[in-house]
Image (cartoon, rainbow, N blue to C red; front, side):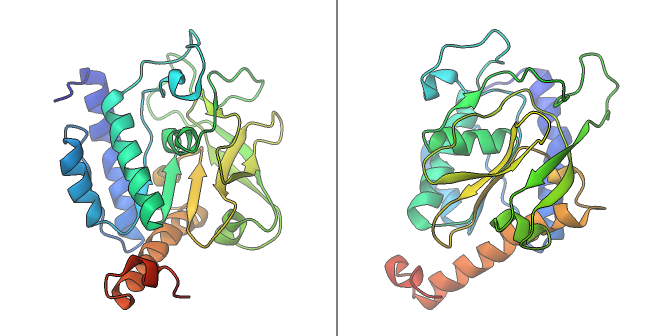
Length: 253
């Protein structure tokens, strides 16, 4: 069993209701996977799920996973979280389930797809709260969403969009992973803010900001979770129509 510092336990207790609340608000049924679960338990739990969401974390991914030495700014890794993410991503890949990665989640998705990370952002644009800032301090900056991307369609249309995102990270996607394309950037410094699958109908989306913090009042944040839940419904329907035959189900329109 993995034991965590009290600060990390407090973080998880504080943020979990935002993630589960956002999924419920979109009409989904959230299933929480404990990081204390054994791999066999995780595999059993994920069988019942029609979609995967990878949330944020106070940890950083182990840079050895993408072939780099640790930067002094890189936070300690969370081996249990990385193990669970890998199992969820493998299941979603095998079964073509929809995936949404948020903050640490986009980074986990990208590294699992053999991409790399920028271990510490040095930029005139602030992407994380300053040390010593008051709890609840919100950092905002613009992000430009590519025209014609799935993310643009989710947020309101096919044209290029400039949105305002809440920012709480010191790392970001560097080289996109296999099958992922960059679909949003911070315009002032080029930091990657979103990636999505470049092929197929499977929803695979990662955003570097935190829509779970703003879903109650922001239509764009609501739309991201609604897209995940609707994609999960479609996946479940395909499986039901295929009578449990995955190869048949995924070919259905």
